[in-house]
Amino acid sequence: MPRKALLGANVALFVLIAFFGGYWLGQSPLAPFRLGPSGVPLGEDAELFEPFWEVWNLTHARYFDQPLDDVALIEGAMEGMLATLGDDNTRYLTPRSQAAEQASMEGEFQGIGAEVTDMDGAITIVSPFEGSPAEAAGLRPGDILRAAGGVELTGMDVGEAAALVRGPAGTAVTLLVERDGETFTVDIVRDVIKIPSVRGRINEDGQAYIRLNRFATPTPEELDALLRELLAESPTGVILDLRMNPGGLLSSVIDVADQFLPEGIVMTERFGDGRETIYRSTNEGAAETVPLVVLVDEGSASASELLAGALRDRGRATVVGETTFGKGTVQSVHQLSNGGGLRITIARWLTPDGFWVHEQGLEPDVIIPYEGIIDAEDDPQLQAAVDVLAGRPVISASSPAPGE
Image (cartoon, rainbow, N blue to C red):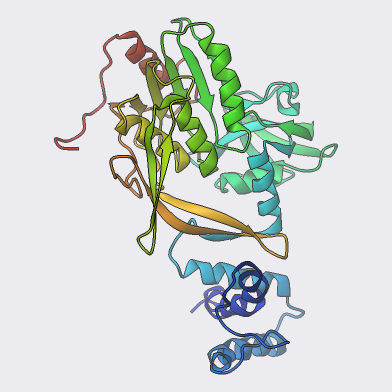
């Protein structure tokens, strides 16, 4: 077995000692096992952990490349333990990742100010934020970020790539950018960025277009203000764009759904022991009767699927685009004593009709393939949504099988 795999499997047990004492004993009224003053399990549990301590001590005593990085071993232990669950959504967050995720949910971070996505392994700019350093530096939608600070970004997870581009306000980052097949470098001084989770406008057909890029803490308030502004112009309908929206806070998506749905079920949360929590909308939404089209694609995940599924099942919207990602579970995030976090799956969620999107996604009513930049002039999915609202014929790429 490769050394890395062996280490991940064996040191995973370390977390049960190092962190259950700090997290579970601190967060839960019931401890999973008794710990002695030094953190070593008492009684029968001590035998369970003997192999771990043997591996820990032998590695520190015999491994040829010393000294060892104990922090890396501990983090590897946590990652190894969680990997045995077979759930990609339950994972350990390093202190850096935890801080970045928290900042994103609060609607503010320090960086260059650009929305990016992964397009065939290339970190691609969707849009620079208005007034941001990225906009001032001339970055455009479709630009590919090949490297940041000399670190190759191609093929990297989009979250990891974004963390490399971000940094303290006032510091500079050198980006290698590809545009139209040619590359160039640009130095950008980072700043404090206010992230708008919602933006919108009235299009040429008199329809309201609303782009929702995530469900963060300020999203419901931002959407409420935007809806009131746009609805004051009496639009003929609303296009709600959830493409490449990876999800976010459960509380935020329930509040957003309430703007478009009359009283009724939004979703059902089902826990492992069979308990259920039903989330409902009220009759207080600003856009409960306006004609509605929802745009989705394979990047629409979790909370985005929840909202699209609720609007579809309740007969409130026509869904246009491509089959969504397929993430039908709910996670909670817990702060750890080292500044990191534990994202853990606690339940599955179901649409009002009881559909579980997990690993299958939502299939749109009108299927329109597209691999370009969202909200560009030649965006066929957006044009299809415009046509659906206007009552013009739209040809779907394929139709759902009978009974689906």
